[in-house]
Image (cartoon, rainbow, N blue to C red; front, side, top):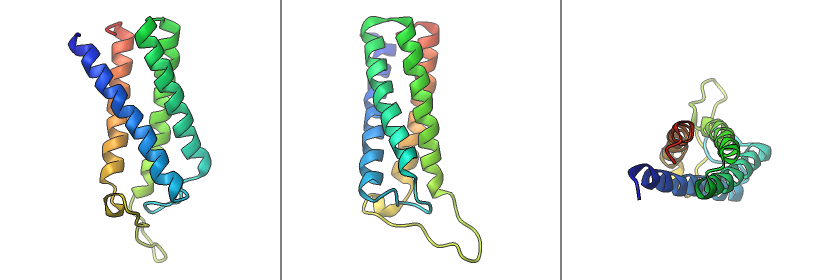
Length: 137
């Protein structure tokens, strides 16, 4: 196996974990974790685009069909944007009526897991796009 393929497989697995854990974390709490409530539509977009991106990306890796790679990369970017919007729930709130973050049982309600997952997915999307564009995988 080449180094680029190993990196791609590892990042693909991590992206799948990100999509799954985001669904589990926010699906159970009704979208409440952090400072903002996440709309169900945004969570559904993240999950759906992520699952479709994963399926298309694995199909592209197996077949090397350029069109499938294009669809997969586009879906990864939709997933990234939705994930970053979900991550925005941790932005600090200011003002007289602001309250602290809603706590859940994942990492004591802190943003560490979300930051790692969604910034990691952003990095993965950059790598996937580069590898697809250059034809390295």
